[in-house]
Image (cartoon, rainbow, N blue to C red):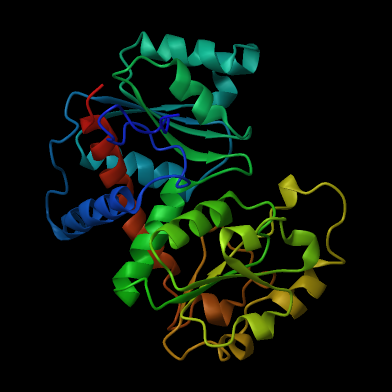
Length: 317
């Protein structure tokens, strides 16, 4: 079966997941994003690549960074941007997701950016839109968050240059994290030497070893000599039952502190997809420290999302 994200020419027409995307496409997105980064320093930050196109942001879950950077990215591409307020839309009256999409398409929508609590919702939309309409997954359930993974990859490449010799540790609630899944697929596709997952057993999904990931339940052991640390938020809203004794106990064993960070390489960078829970998964001294590139991730996210939107909108039907 053809990858549903690609058209018959092998071009990216939707971005639904990093899983199954070839390295060439991931690299193309990163290279395209690199051309957009300097725009932030210009007096006029716009380019006309999506002039006349209508971008609809459909966020069925709360968001700060993702929604705002998508909006900024679309505006910098000169698109017309529409943010649907789900709480006061007809979805609150029982309108189905596909009916919402059909009505917005009738309003000449060209591109949908979708965040949804149900895994697979962006896939469903992509299966039912017209060939000229594009869908970007801004996070679906526990499944995927591809643009977050891509901006993370851009950040790693910016500071570390080459993926091939890196050891990257993903720390925290891997079980419930769509960011972790998308990052692991992207890291392995881009040829990272070693990917580690560090978490208590209750927060580790099965099958990580089949993805080439080394699993650690001892954080100090897992952080030894790593080049990159991606710290994850505890996804309390997705947990069923008590998987941890307390946030205090979690921080004691798995919170990233200066003491634990010292076990990594001296030039190790610290990342976090946000929102951060300071004092739970990361100490403020680390989040605000010299090895943190967390705010760089946010900045690069604009350029990466510009790249994704310009690439998918430029693909032929």
